[in-house]
Image (cartoon, rainbow, N blue to C red):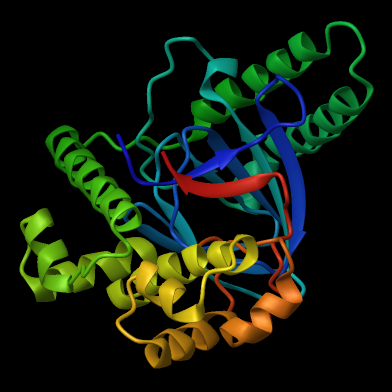
Length: 305
């Protein structure tokens, strides 16, 4: 299955990752790992597959493997705590779960006793990954399994068999489309062409695309192209016109306009500021100044595989 895919580099050979961020939102993506997103402060507007909701302080968002998810916005001063881990740490024969809702409220988390267990899990992961004492991997794996299976006991499941299967097929096709857009970003990709690949009318496709990604088709495609352009600007000496053509733009004027719209800087300004470090504009959504938008997590990349 190919799609717009987040790939993570881990600090150890144990595929588990814990990090806290302030004031971020992110464009639609998916990954093979399970993601637990705890709202420590504030609130965040999210969508996980076809579930749209606002997660508030104390809530826990659960994204199972392969789930397309994104954040529309977050409240000022929000603090988000992520635990991301490989399904193999749960089971070598892990099976995807379709949750009726991918959210546990603060009240549900507290009543089930899982809030204390979640905070203890975060502390244990940080300590064991830092110290790497004997059997640290076994301790982290056991703690993750303990929390995950207790979580599954109270997570409501979607029992709609045939509906679930149709949704799964549609999501796989959509992931393939996003992959195609990445692989062919330098070519002339139109909304009508993309709609045909999904067997949708252009108007229905536009609606579904916005629902699943939180942004319009053209904006999403341009963001992919500008991320590619940032790599070329940082790592090559190509003339601006060649970079524009290589990234799917027909002229430099349009390239400059779109680049500034997404990054907050012109390509020339970006080259002077960025140096040799390209930015991942396909992950963090805000189009503020590129200095503020420098990727906050250097061990996370987003790429097509």
